[in-house]
Length: 149
Image (spheres, rainbow, N blue to C red):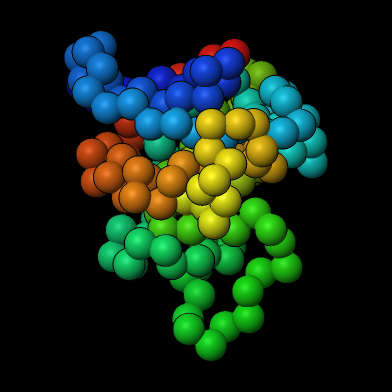
């Protein structure tokens, strides 16, 4: 069974199959630290699952606003933290992180690929666009995710 393990300390995401590492990717967690408070822009820790996979039919580099792909002529969202390429929307499975889905915490691509490896996001787990496209294709809806300090 596949699972995703994210280390905040190492800024790494490891895809495991039957507990054996099969892929490792650099990531960026929140620049505001770890936490679950509503509106805190912090990355939650604990046990999660992939609740929804969004964007699989779109080309890499597609920009999403509210999980909807923008068309060529659409204005860009008023944020530096663009959600790009693919979205793995996380559902919290622990009492302390049960609000994760309502906080819109995703694993997603970014236009800030040069910052991957440092905590620079607004709560989500950012990945390089090519990496999140690859990961998206390797995991299923319901895949377990563990985020640890």
